[in-house]
Amino acid sequence: MPKLSISPLILFIAFLLILFSSLAQALEHVYQQPENFVNEQFKAKPKVKLILLTKEMQSEVSRILGHAPRKLRQRYWTDGLRTLWILEEIGKTDPITAGFVVKNGRIEKAKVLIYREHRGMEVRFPSFLKQFSGVSLSTGNSLDRKIDGITGATLSVHAMERMARTALYFDKLSSTK
Image (cartoon, one colour):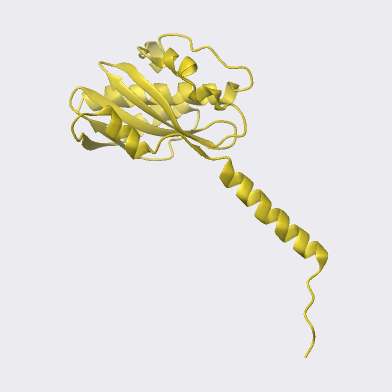
């Protein structure tokens, strides 16, 4: 019976694959589970609703995001006065998951829930997120004020701006239903 031998190169490659996969998992920073964010924002259990994106809506979301929407159905929560949106957008290479609470067409609260990028996690700090408080949409579904960037986190800042615009656009759609 021949003896099986494993080459040191194969062992080294296997070790690197295991190391890199565990590092990739370690880069996911869960600051708050989305369902906990939803429960924290409403006193009573909110209604879960759904927006089905028509072709026209898909076109506008594509314009806001700079790419086609990944989902054609967007779930949201409402108590009749406020809406809550959990959205994901790519920063540089990986998705950022954020929650946005909207009341009267203005962002009441923005929070980074899960951050997966190597850099730019400063977008999760309250000093950055408070800039979104009170923001609404202006002409062309742009934000009505400038959001100051963070050195080294430009792409994450832009992702947060795109998600804020999308949440406000979706809120506008939900109020017309």
